[in-house]
Image (cartoon, rainbow over all chains, first blue to last red; front, side, top):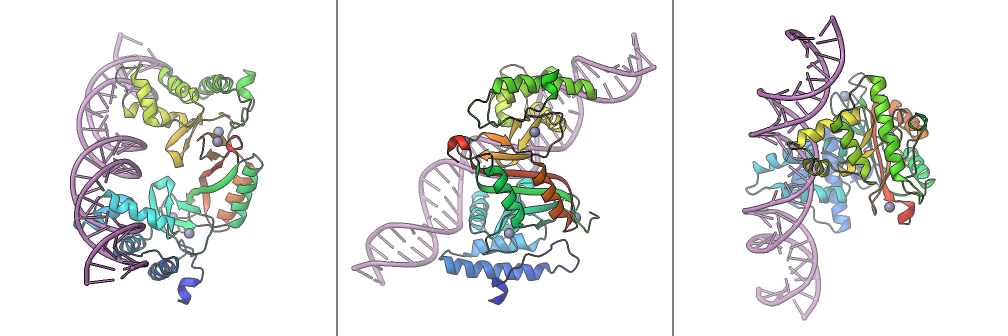
Length: 164
Length: 164
DNA sequence: GGATAGTTTGATACTATATAACATAAAGAG
DNA sequence: CTCTTTATGTTATATAGTATCAAACTATCC
Ligand SMILES: [Zn+2]
Ligand SMILES: [Zn+2]
Ligand SMILES: [Zn+2]
Ligand SMILES: [Zn+2]
């Protein structure tokens, strides 16, 4: 299980990015983490995570629903949203607020700040996961007497491949 | 027009915050800015901006719609969303992505980074508008070859009044 | 194994958020 | 007053997310 233990924060924009390798590592990691935490990595949960990783750009809830409908009889919005909630809670995926969409986390199981780089051209999303940024935000908020629990940080722009 | 020219980035969480003064200043500023830019500050646009400032917490599009319906005959979703688009474009309001809601900008007319502090208890929102944060985000993204055009930065937590 | 408590999924209905497309009206330019 | 542009009215539809209750599954204890 070495591959599921080591950080796999990948540069999604890079040329040589092997997405299917990410996919396999992420699925293996999720399974292992669930076992550790005593959570159930059910067929549905695995399948939704697979579907998210099948694509290398953010996936929308109703896209997932449509795909599930081809596989399961009674898939409905709650089927998808409940599963997404689980995957989010366990840190296996991230929600992209500015797109109402979801991406697989490249480093599940390792707590990290979530900061996303969203290319407005190809719509791919990479994780920044920078501690300096998280720290600065925390500090600046604290200086205003504000205690930060969570942060939505999404940078829109142009990725290197698209000519950033 | 001194009041509309000076920065009115107010600490919304503060005890002595005079929201109605903010409201009047923001409306006057919007009017002046529209005149300068050759944009039309129509009755509808003014009214929607007023409605947003009437409350001191983020307002949802359909709340605005409901209020407009009491005043205009044929208010419909596009009425609201088009007006919100205008107010956003001109920088008179900000959208809170994590709440699907809108707040009046405390400093319209002065370009500033938009970083929001969202209290998960009272739901009030304050602007951080910090250049250091914006610069750091830009730098970190640039180091990945990513050119930032815009940013969504929303910190959820507990404000000073609610015991942050 | 069988009772049972907790969790997950199925199923139906509904609420909330946002946009498309085309028609009418109002405002500004000449 | 025309013409052009911008703003708004109007209807319909698309997209996103939640509430509720029932059925099925899983783990645990006896
Ligand atoms: Zn991640
Ligand atoms: Zn790109
Ligand atoms: Zn502002
Ligand atoms: Zn508060």
